[in-house]
Picture 1: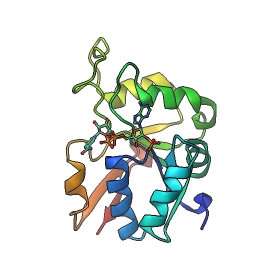
Picture 2 (picture 1 turned 45 degrees about the vertical axis):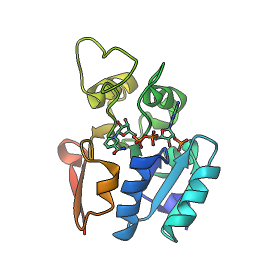
Picture 3 (picture 1 turned 90 degrees about the vertical axis):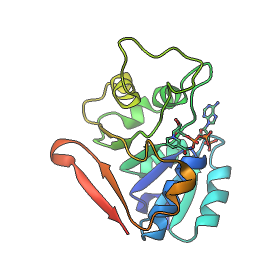
Length: 169
Ligand SMILES: NC(=O)c1ccc[n+]([C@@H]2O[C@H](COP(=O)([O-])OP(=O)(O)OC[C@H]3O[C@@H](n4cnc5c(N)ncnc54)[C@H](OP(=O)(O)O)[C@@H]3O)[C@@H](O)[C@H]2O)c1
């Protein structure tokens, strides 16, 4: 299996991304993991998840996957999600991708929240500014350690006519 055959991609192999990826793989959904080191960490993580998981760079995930979970860390001096969007703006734009943004960048960040106050989802959607991209959020307020205990989980993605529910059991 290559990343091209995985509809769901993960940008960032941290606690949350790996926990959600584990749930999807267990439900039989192929995933492609991406790590900022060019894919070495993602490939190692994918091997632990089994045959439905592959690893690669963030570019590989962006190019291969239609649905992207952006699971990047809380910001320090800058917002990693904005840095990711800047680095992959051209590859993301005009493709009609679905980006699922579970980040909570203003909880204990060193950055002041943007004014006027916006959710991370609204802020990042405006930051990309691509009308073809559909944004959604999921798993935002559940601790990563609880996710792998899910017997059943719903992941909502998309907006309007593109809205769908994945039921993961
Ligand atoms: N942890 C939870 O239970 C939980 C629950 C709901 C929502 N959230 C939110 O989900 C987001 C991710 O949380 P997490 O616990 O998974 O975070 P994390 O484990 O600390 O980091 C996630 C990934 O962010 C990337 N990263 C780390 N430091 C970075 C930096 N300085 N610059 C750029 N990228 C960096 C890394 O990607 P690579 O793997 O590519 O190196 C890392 O694996 C946060 O916004 C958090 O608030 C977390």
